[in-house]
Length: 182
Image (cartoon, rainbow, N blue to C red; front, side):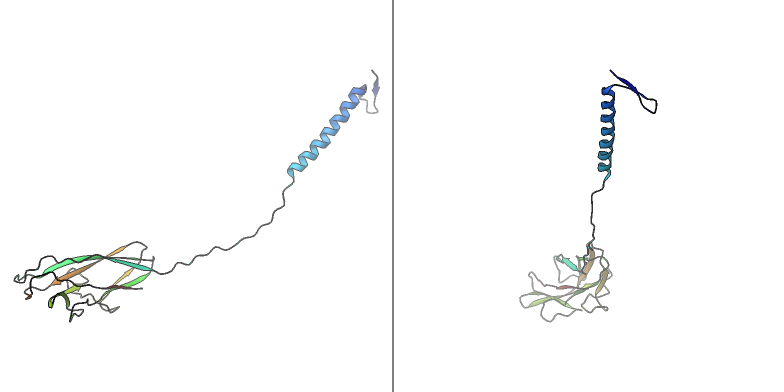
């Protein structure tokens, strides 16, 4: 084994030490290169796009039957009934609910007609429980107003058949059309 002293005063002990130093230098160099390679960033490109949706004003209505039940033409008391209209409109949508005169012969908004053969029974539909505000079709005059919430909103229809109407026994019917204007 040969010992040598370098100019810096380090004692080298043979060939094995020199080889070890060269190997160590190579590892440091390669390790540094590997470390540098692991820190390199991948190339990227970016963009963006707009996302849009349009919410339309929309309304639907669900009407349930109004059932007056038994009417006694000799009673001095009017016969009352109610029904519920469920209006579902887009949130924030203003609307008006109108009720037509119905299909009875000679019917009007103020005096609708239930029919059985050629016989009729008069009745009226109201917007209030006191039965003073007749429910009709003229927006801003005799319709019910509302604003949509996105959920069903109930509107009660109050009906009244006047007392002491001469009518034949039988089942009287009529059909009312509900119109939601928005």
